[in-house]
Amino acid sequence: MKSSWQVATAAEAFAAAQFCRCGWDISVQYGANQPEYDLVAVDGDTMLKVSVKGSKDGSWGLTQSHLSNADYHAAIDAWLLKHSKKTVFCLVQFKGTAIHELPRMYLATPQDIADRMKATAAGRGDTILYERKQWTSRAHGAGTVDEIPASWKFSVERLAEVAALARARR
Image (tube, helix red, strand yellow):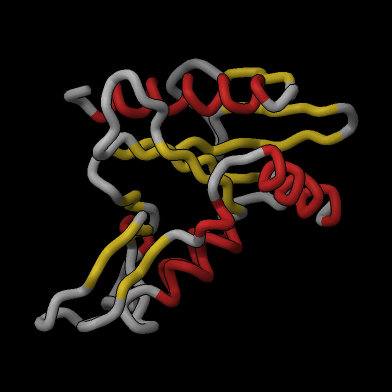
């Protein structure tokens, strides 16, 4: 995959397939004017708006457009306000995966992501969500490692967990 469009398109296809593998029905949005989500996933009475974010470099830039005066926490808060309580994120990572392998996939609520991003760089925060980043000696977060929690890995159990959270936020 060379272009960001190819990464995004592949990520969306893998995400849709993974939800289907878990027995969920999927409706895919197409076109240039999409709202905050890419897919609608439905299981019985439970509906999730799924925002799919693909990456081939080990990170997802999420809040750059909200950053002002290097206030990372305010940027993250502004980003968080843009997402409904029914939205979940499916993060798809292609870095280091061979063509015959599935990409790594994670499920997280907007609040999960905001909390993780605020803790980044020893609590300074960042506009980027890292799959795994070890901060070098010259960085603000020197000596720390930021990593997506293992509990976010896409699984039947994680999907049930985020679906329960969405149902509780009606």
